Length: 393
Ligand code: FAS
Ligand code: PHB
Image (cartoon, rainbow, N blue to C red; front, side, top):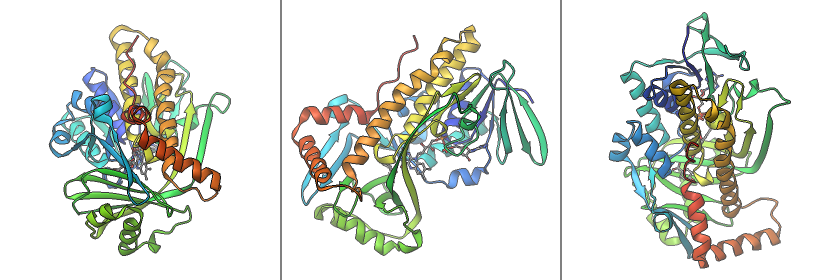
């Protein structure tokens, strides 16, 4: 087989890259190890930055999002019995967020790929990037019991944190930065009307979050210890704990119901540098992981793909390699900004088991300061909205 760009991974990064390359006249093949049904069964992100919304609209992926998505001016942070403030992204930046599930985006991406009869090979096994530092890289894999070689000009590693691509970069070249948090998030999806706002709660018993997928589908999270077992959390226990962690008037407004999905995600911050090596380019979770506190994971995957598709299009249009050469540095500037914001919000809103009384006081003061300072809220809103994409110079 031969293509211009071999894309490893059919999650949001891989499928969006394939779509954007197609629109730039560049051919790609997507190799996904799981079935389409499995990819669509994963419940993950739910909040899209304005930059992500703009990219999806510009690539013909906005119609259902605009119909079913929920626009928000910002998010609410609550703590204690009545303390709260609103991260008003619209007031400070003139931008809005859209609550629209990653699952929906994945469905829209698969539908667009089917529309253009794209080559998306699911259940591809033993995918291996080869000769990535040569001018003739290729990928080997097994498909329906047949061993296949896919020759290409470039390889895009969009295969997530546990993928094979990042591991292809030699140890002497790759630098990894990691911070593991001493807790996870227990998430529930329920067919119940959500609270009107996305609400983050800091409570002595732990963090809680109220979000949504649409006006009939709610998404809630609780901070839980790392050794938590899902079977220990009945729906009743989840709802009563959630209502303890929200101030009374919010707790009373929560409409409970049977969970249709329940999962635990560990929290970590992780960045791999550089995000390219020879003709291999990493995008999305293959290169970085953020704690979901800042709702940045999916949005970073989109910004990486925006930069990478622009760079590859420039190569095929006019033979220029400058954007490809500068991809890693440009993507990492935005990655580290989001990694820092997500780390800051995780420290601000969670209870750390080993926190000293000093740490606790400092956290409480930070919340009080944010509540009192228009400037501090504007700075947080700017970070939360996500930095603008850099121009191609
Ligand atoms: P993905 O992991 O989504 O996709 C990678 C794809 O590559 C997968 O389909 C995988 O099967 C495939 N793959 C892996 N190895 C392969 C191989 N060797 N060969 C071929 N294919 C291979 N972000 C938020 O903003 N908010 C959230 O609330 C949130 N919750 C999350 C909960 C969980 C449990 C997880 C894991 C992540 C969550 N995220 C959240 C982050 C998430 O949304 C990611 O940022 C997003 O999926 C990134 O997309 P990709 O980079 O495409 O990686
Ligand atoms: C979600 O809706 O899943 C969500 C919202 C905000 C976050 C993380 C996840 O920070």
